Length: 219
Image (cartoon, rainbow, N blue to C red; front, side, top):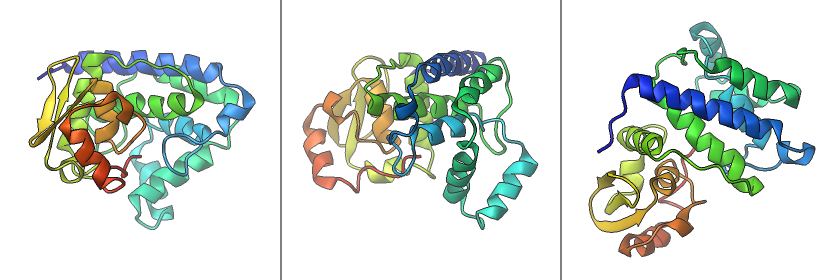
């Protein structure tokens, strides 16, 4: 299994934030309001969410109270409120985060990596944009997402499948083999179907029989 050092993880986060800022700078007016891979989220909502990764404890508590204790609702509502800002603000705000080691309350250094990798795809793929994922970073994020319960519940959703990356030494689960690039497996683990066409093996038929139960839960 791939194991990145903490410093390497933060360097990858910085690289992804800067690259995503460049992508946001290139978006046209219609693209900002296009649907993302996250159900009910526009591209602008996802971009806004990524700029909130430094949200402090007190603002987070206030936002959770406004959402009546619902975590997913809080994440969505804060993003939608922030999405009302002018589009030109999002890329500079992402760039300003590069080099910082701040993170939201209650998360490890791996969640910002997971967020920027997956949400970068949430933005790019529906717009027909190509955004390659660094293999080592994607494997590290996939392992983190697999090991978490909430919000992905990957081990429950994908029970009976053995996920194996074709481009690096990463695997998870047991059962029918399901293989493909680790970037595609990361999207699957986080509840997205956009990369199913990149996967193969006996487990793919099992997965398709379960849809949508085997996916969803991504945010």
